[in-house]
Length: 552
Image (cartoon, rainbow, N blue to C red; front, side):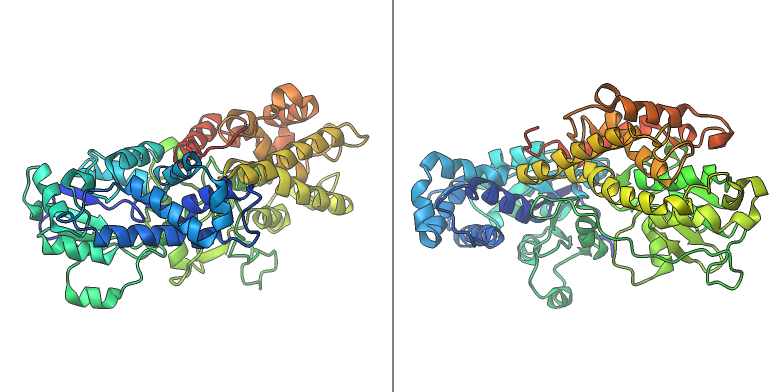
């Protein structure tokens, strides 16, 4: 559905529509109250946050500017917090000073944007004038825009009109402020009552679905017809798919969904065949990097097609752009987004759109999106199509995953994955001090363990001796990114590889600079793009990390 008369001005509700308040407020309450001896052990911080939000909704809906002096939302947040704590937790409330309650009330100035908000506003600014139209007071909205790097053209608040939505004076006043008719403005919100009031004032209306924000009857609203545009439901899932940390501040990587295998057996569901499979990846992703290294090491370049996506994760997930060596469109189907490939494989798919993806052109489906399993397929599944010298059975040490070392490799993989490969993300994406501390120290303890491992007999020059194994590949993709990205941007900054881990640094440099036949002319160096790695990490920092208050 589209708007019949494109608006000149887009007016955005903010709380719940542009920023996600539940996680930020819950974390702020937990951070401020959890160490207080008077805080009950069974306190439900999320429930407390939701009650606080409910008091705001009641306040703004019942405020009457004709009989009451104007009270800012900041002041209401303070008084309502004071009242809620006094009623529910009187012993705790008695220990908090006025200054502490006021400071906690300002947590509403530091709410994380939804994953698509900043980039979406940036794109919309090229076609429309964008502005807030929120019940939040002006200072609060300015702080939210700065905190979340939200590029609104103007900040417009209910405070400007001495009333609160859904009062008609707010909607009509916003249009007048821009010097346009109400019909030349569109109200964008995740709340149907807001849009219904805006429509009654002559504005166009756009509903954006957000998780847990609207409990009303959407079917009845559609029938009533006060919404001009309904944003696709999948937009409401974007933040759940791409939000990094859970509500408690910890990052937990979700399991991959597609877990089939290519087999050398000609009768298998996915038999090894030349030019049947396509590997989708982006150069910035360390998990996808594993598969690119092994594809090169095994000489599969002419057997498995490679398709490269843009190195950045956009608001709609991984996408094609033509930048930095990526494809302009998916060469198979002309898709612009990776998620379209997922939906082609399964129209009812509801998970995350991750890379790498190994695609079967014959069955037109995803074989696997789990990097650790894709690289093991590459070791042997296609060997019959390779020259004898490239086959694992002809490798003097048994190949990348030799039988006599599998127990040791698997054991090392387990802690390297948890503490290092994934540890940098659990550290970098932490949104609370507790979550950061719980992961940064184990990360460096694990790096210390690798340094000690390389000092032991039989563990040089590679992790398990004279030959490169899977363990080297899996560790390399994190170490090559460590000093250039994770150290500064992900706050993994207790030590640096180049200065503090001489054995790891030597091991890493040997892999990177080796352009001999051992690495098929530079499998590690030729698949490592430092300028992409650092740029992608900086953008991740700007979108997700830079404004989180973590002490390192």
